[in-house]
Length: 253
Image (cartoon, rainbow, N blue to C red):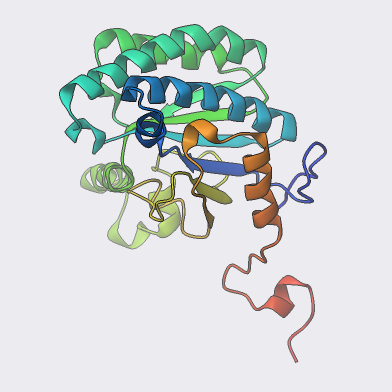
């Protein structure tokens, strides 16, 4: 693993790929006697801040869990609100992201979205495809189990046509069919809002990711909070199954 030297934050080492579960919009609003709508709108502002902060710090990939496959279970008015906010935010932000050299990607089963939203998603990806700065991945109608299932289905289809034999099925083969196969795996997972669980997010990709949980609600998450998470990441030794001595380059006795 290689990490970029952090020029604008107190972190000595930065993760290449940060993945975030943005939790706490509703509770942020409730604490202020506001509607959940207000919380989600403030959460959208936090997204803008963190995208800018990651770009400035040289982080290569930022993946945000915007809407899970389980979020359809929420009250219908809130789901409709989230869909409308998703579309209006995409319309408003795409030019800003393009100018900032951000490449936008979406992962998840987009077939459940309205045709208008699907069209805007495709246009946004196409418009920013050649950008070379931060890759911003939006996980929408996404679930980690869904990702593994769709990858397995693709492998099974290849096997059914004789292109793959049972002995050819390896971890690497399955990985090549997952949603983020062309990007570095997440180095740092952040969850705001005080909960300490992954919630079906990037289950395959988080196998060796450093986990960081904070009580701060997502609308309050800012540059300093990101730097604190990066500092915690930089303080950890990532061994990937090796000993501390191996990682440090010292031969075992």
